[in-house]
Image 1 (tube, rainbow over the protein chains, first blue to last red):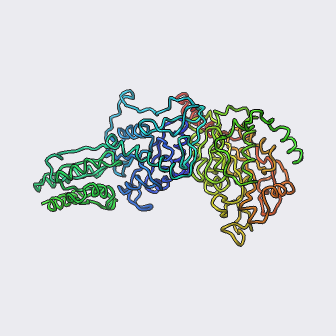
Image 2: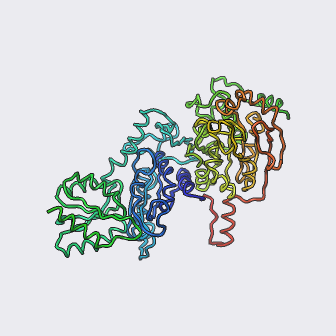
Image 3: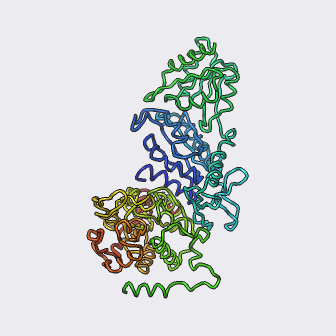
Length: 327
Length: 300
């Protein structure tokens, strides 16, 4: 397609004609796609947007890494909605999580953000590709109803409406305007509330099922480093450095960043563990961590503006700082 | 056929009044969404009626037709036709339609939207879609302004036209849409006014049948803004103007069909060529040539 505005909507045309579709870009292209991420959220179009993050803002640092589009991925389009975002830290995970991304998009009828960074994007490692029949694929949730009884945006028990595709004889209407169960525009506060509340809730109420992370040595830790993407690989080295100082450090690596694992972070805070959020920006996921902790324990940001990965020493320093605040 | 004869023919052709009290276009329109939002004597309704008749005459199963609109007054068309229809974002109906067509080439994909949407905001997409010769029928209702948002100057507003953002007259050079679309590769280009219902319907039939990128421009009155601000009266007065000032010139050089504020409007079928393969034909032929028997032609 001619530009990112076009690709981000052509893929939705393809989805409504029955295919699975994705598009891949970096910062500026992602900014151009924002309007259509909103359209996908509003029309509940299952699709995947890949952002190989660079340093920004604007043209920023092409071909150098960043992780500063995380809040944009969450709420970059206007209006209120929720999406799902995954962050791989290796070529193997790019393969594995891409399948998960498509599956989640179909299960929840939501655009899924696949938030890579330049390092993971250019990384070369061995990838094991399983046989096709070993891969779990979530099929599109097509309606079982007949055209005369079908309402395109009537939610089923799980808050998600059954879908059809163009050409199936259902004669559907799909609009980015606030719409009722029929899919017809309705300009009222009541309809807006009914629709947007559900769009938000279908993710929020299922957050426990969607959230996914990995933990290492968290149980005994005094300090837990939270990270995602390439930064989680640097964090491993930082943890080792801090442990040499005699600090018990655990790691929490976010695989699904949005929705955010609020419950788990609250638990960690209740257990009195200091938290370090390591990310290549000046505090985006950090704000979420800080919000969940509510001042109960120290939360320290190990951030920088991108262009290269963290120095492990810098994260280790923040671990020590967090540990000192704790005592 | 004169315009008067054309109107008489249209009346003769019009469906008989239903004895069941149903609207004659019941099969094509979402009657549960009527009344529509268009102003009295706006030209869009006529265009939709002609489109319904074109579909009827083409005898294409309606389940195989998809209508995609963008945003704006004409952008609302997708909401009133009782076929699979998508009301997308401003200017981006063509790339959405491209996605549908490529995913399922068996569908008849129609883009129905306004000049501000398709040509101004979506300018990049229309030139690229025509260049690719993707098999779409684009119906563009041109009312010379961004009507829904209050009448701002559009890239089609004639010079000297008075609009909300040009109180002293527009000084920009407007697009000549047939010339633009022909020059970037459209295989079918026609222009009619909202008065030429018979010929407009025929152009839509031609466009639906034509493989490749067809572009049909419909000049339509905007009584609430364009006509009022420029003191052209209401939509009916404007139809009289079209009657007196439009000239049918099939095969005209599209360079010569630009529209001035009070100028003659050249209408007709300007382009109808068969020498360009469609996007999918090109892709299949090219890959067949490069890959030989390894390549399975794509059919959706």
